[in-house]
Image (cartoon, rainbow, N blue to C red; front, side):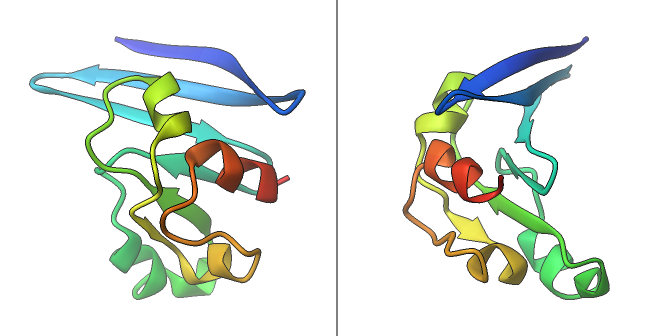
Length: 100
């Protein structure tokens, strides 16, 4: 099952997506510029093979819900996210606000 819902951070509406799969759930919250995602996000792939796309993204591990994704520390971020000041350790909400 796929669920999309508005997620409000700092007065800004973003898009939350939850994809329930066997034995796992994929989570993401996106802005017009970038997104944060659960541990399924391959930051190494985005920084390497897909670097020409200049994707702004950050990953949190061990999250199971969209609220957890917002409050979790980012475990890794893309090079393009770093250029915006997004760093590992900041919360998902903090990272998203820098993606506006």
